[in-house]
Image (cartoon, rainbow, N blue to C red; front, top):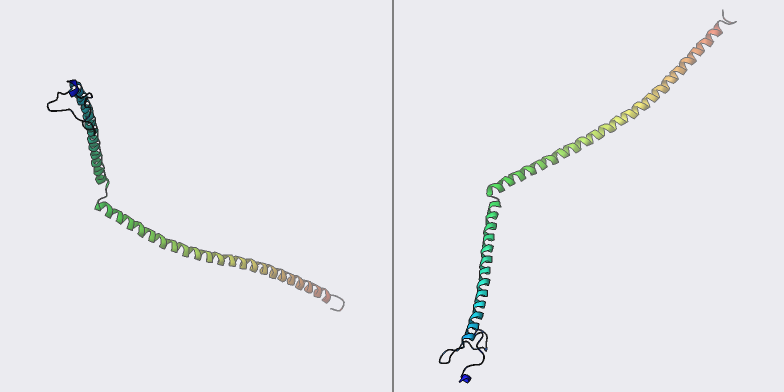
Length: 165
């Protein structure tokens, strides 16, 4: 009569080609059924654990997304901030334009100063030349005075000599 019972107890009805626990008119092996239930319990607990971990990770990802969204809305610029920045940028642009005008004025004044410096240098060299000429003329005048003085002294000495009288 033992030939009617199967020699190997069923292990996993989820695997293909493996029969599950037998039902019906044939008696079932309690040890095989217990082993099958334990294996089923292990698989179910592993799946439950994996599902719980996935749910926790999904919850954490949702919390992080909410925190990032709140932070982004707190750090975003309002329309008033944008208008204020636009005003500041236009003010800086106007100042830069004024700086360009000032630079042009500075360049113009610098050119005028350079030309005045050249004129002063020319006047200085002309003054030096004039002073040299004046010195030469003064020397010539001194020489002429000396010559006149010599002529007068020679003519005076010639008048008081033997033929004069």
